[in-house]
Length: 303
Image 1: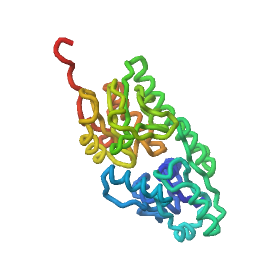
Image 2: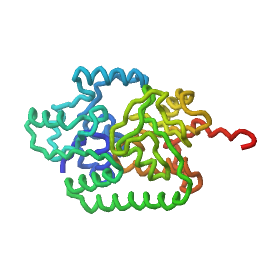
Image 3: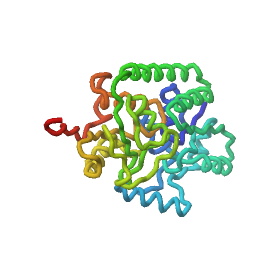
Image 4: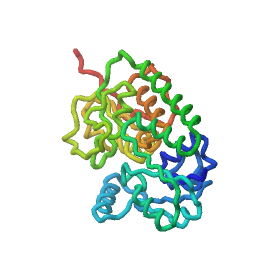
C-alpha cells in the first residue's frame, strides 16, 4: 500500500509496523525511522521562520492564526505524483501538524480518492488505539497487535516498579514564553511514570498562564517545550529556572521525540520520566532523552 504520512507521529507508527518501504510522502519533521525524510519525498513543510526564540515563535503563530494563515505548506504536486492509497493526517492541532481540512482540499484539487485516516488521540490509551487503527487501515493488524502488546507490557512494568512509592507533584511546561501547562496525553505520561501532573488538563488543550499562575506546591518540574529536542529544552529550562519555585528539581526532556509526538516513543518518555522521579526503580534511559537542569535544594538545617 502506498502511504503518505502528513505528520511525524504517523511516520513513526508506520515505521514500527514495518511499513517504511510503503511510505511515498512524509513531512520535513519526520525523523523516525532515521533518515526517512532523505529517502522519501517531503510533501509537508513549515510556513514558520526558522531559528526563533519561544517568544518569537509564539508571536508568529498567534499572528498567522489571527490572519487565517496556515502553519504548514502542502506540496500538492508532489503529493499528486506520489499517488497515495492511504493518507495519515490529524485534526487535533493546527499548530502541530497539517490539519485534515487542508488534506481534504488537496484531495479535491489533485483528484485523489485515497483513504484518509485522521490520527487524533487525546489520551495515552488512545495513542495505542491509533496504532491499531493504522495497522488495520494498512492491512497489518497482526503487526499492530504485537507493537501495542509490547508497549503495554512496558507500561505495566513501570507501573509495577513505582507502585507503593510516594507520588511526587510534577509540573510540565509545554512552552516557556509564555508558559503553557500541559494537556492531551502529556499528563498521562506523568501519571504512568508514578507522578501527579499538577495544573494539567488530561485530554484537553494546553493553556498559557502567567508565571505567577503556576502551582507552588511542587516536587519536580519537567520542561518539555513542544517540538524541541533535549539541547534546546535544557537551554530553555535554564532560562526560566528563576521563575520556578525555589528548591524544586528541574528536568529537561526531549519533547519532540518523547512527549508531544503521539507515537510509540511516548513509552520511552514514560520510562525516562519514571527514572527521574523514582531513581533506581527503572533502568536509566539512554543519553539524550532527559537531563537534570537543577537539583533539589537540601532542606534547611534542623528540618
